Length: 164
Image (cartoon, rainbow, N blue to C red; front, side, top):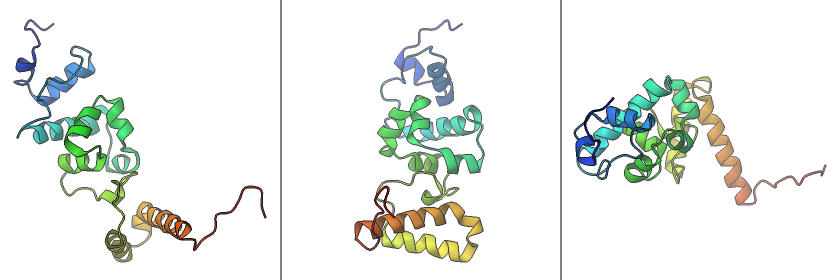
């Protein structure tokens, strides 16, 4: 049992993961004011994101790629962090915690407005260099993106339900 009052000022002196555990154990109702502000905020976010992925979820790289989403952050009381520091982008939070370990297109949900002609070209080049088997998820995304764009431009007609 804690003998000291859990004031916001005191909580800011604790290690970030400790504060997060207090929140998850319902010993505090939210992160203290200014927790996601200032020069230490990205460091705190990094430590807590690593703890979420490795300690709470116990995910490996494949699971991060396939399952990371806004919902995961929300379900684990980190939506405020995601919105405050990363504009709601799970990829940016992951990139902050694991620099250069993941490509944005590897995650189940890429950041909004990620797909541009340049990013499609870059990912296509990566697929050409690494093979389709190594990049199946990216290949599927590009194909879905291509089909969606072609449909919007009228190059592919949507099939109406119950029509031959």
